[in-house]
Amino acid sequence: MKFIALKTENGKITGKIAFCCKALEVSRQGFYEYLCELTGKTSKMKKAG
Image (cartoon, rainbow, N blue to C red; front, side, top):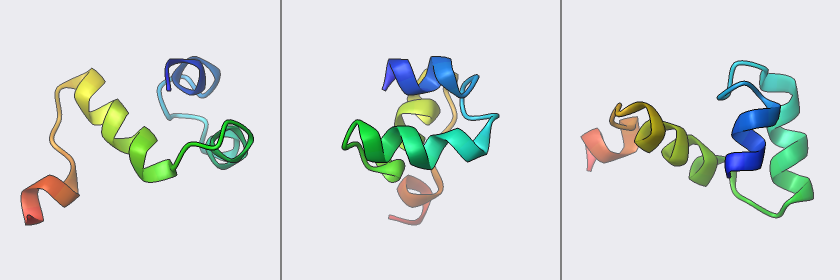
């Protein structure tokens, strides 16, 4: 997850996210939740649930 965050500048470069997640066999939702934890924000999924 940390590698993808570095390569995509914490999710700002969106074109690389799907490629990196697929190459490293990580879900995009998992990466999104990792970014939420990293920045201290809550994810939309956790608010709804």
